[in-house]
Amino acid sequence: MALLAAQMYTLRNQCKTVPELAEACKRVKAMGYDGVQLSGVVEVAGDEMRKILDDTGLACAATHISLDSMENNTAAVIERHQKMGCKYTAIGGYFPKENWTLELWEGFIAKYNTIAAKFAGSGVKIGYHNHSHEFSPASGVRPMDLLMQRLDPENTWIEIDTYWVQHGGADPVEYIRRAAGRMPCVHFKDMTITPQRNHKMTEIGDGNLNWPGIIEACRYAGVQWYIVERDDGDLDPFDSLARSCYNLREKMGL
Image (spheres, helix red, strand yellow):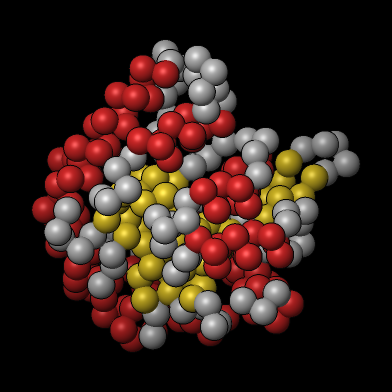
């Protein structure tokens, strides 16, 4: 059976204190999840978070942290992740607001590779999580393609987000397959469309994404952790995670 993790960013408004986070972990475990990804919730010391995980029978599949923390607090980041037993962290994306140029992206990638080298041998690897803006060309080149070509495959990993690839006008199946061998964790989000033609996040299996193709591609790519997330939507966040877990396990056989 595949390993499912809940991206706790989904529950960010319900996890503003340590007791709230601990209770949320219990509820996530009861839904059928094997792990969590920590992002957007209360900051917890590595030892304390490990106790919460052990008490609930969950693993920390991955985290999202800031680029600044990776670069300037490398040792502390490594130590915290080692204490939690977590091998993967990532930035949620790179968001240049000006000078959308190929050179800007090339500079970021060079910087990120340098930061990644500082983690080498630590047992913790840094990755990149996409949104949709990486599919907006710079000098005719999609930054997402550049990231996949030039990020060091030995020291970095790719965290494909299915919703945001689709939102960017690309095919999640294609990009998952292209990331084969360097994508230990994937972000599962589903997309639906409103009558007003607006994109909207929804629970896995309730939207329009090609889940049979996506799951097959993930198996081909060697994904270890299937991480479920929904930033916003109609259902209560806990109900959303529960429904997605049910659909993946019972309807899709994951």
